[in-house]
Image (cartoon, rainbow, N blue to C red; front, side, top):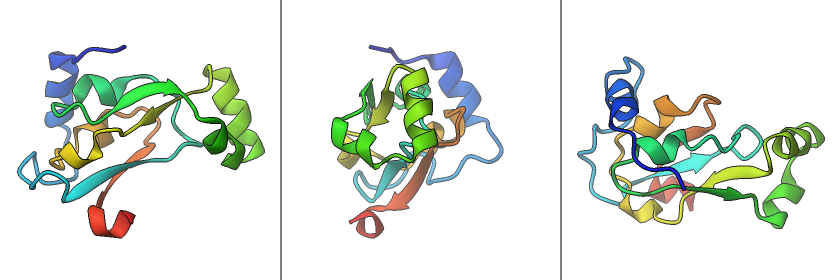
Length: 115
């Protein structure tokens, strides 16, 4: 399991394209959405998130089945790992995960829009 990486979080915080509310949104107002076909499970989101929203693990079979052929191949090449958001309700819309993700697989959306 990846641990928080303060240096990586600091670089993400300084990124000029960082979206969100700079950790000032009420918890659960925004949620991160992970595009499974793009995520390579590299742990960057886990390393920068100050609220432990993410975990990176083996992709669920049901999520794997929904991927395109290229998405499945990409997933297998990367050990079938992907990010999940078991603690999405704790998200404060920092945007750190969005700019830290090397695949640009994460977006922030208002919680009501994600439902």
